[in-house]
Image 1 (cartoon, helix red, strand yellow):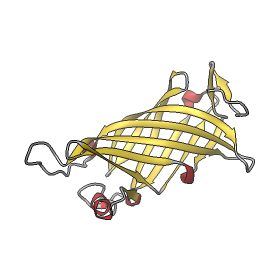
Image 2 (cartoon, one colour):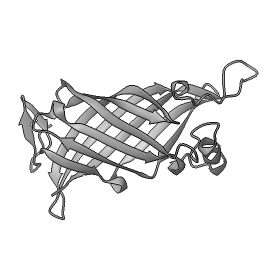
Image 3 (cartoon, one colour):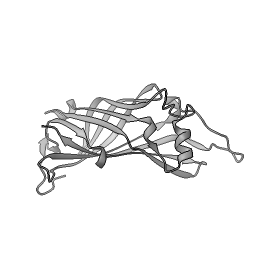
Length: 192
């Protein structure tokens, strides 16, 4: 994606951000999830407290991503539900205060699209996942810095991470769906 006035570089004919260490800007980044409720409705939530870094290599396929999320920062806009999600029935935030993602491989898919493979740890359980990622560009900010933008998503079965709490519905099915859609809108700042 070439945008006028946007700093960027090319790698094998595709745009990619400047090599270096980029820190995730939590005030301009969203980590959100979506799950089915009562088999039909979709409930959305987010995490408010997190930190992360992307180390972009000269060869982008050698780049790394590390993200740490505080489980207690979960926010679904309903205090009772958030308290339940922090409990041992779900995240067990007292015993497992952090969720994390650590990349193991970065692969170019097509154009601005990338696959970031890595280990996702939730509730003390670590499993591999793949983030389908889009590089959205790099630009100078008003304070003399450089910012890069990425969108990513994945889907997981929450039971694979030990999040098995549920209630059966009289009509069949479950109160909480098993599949969780996770989306990230990341703004990262290049470190000097």
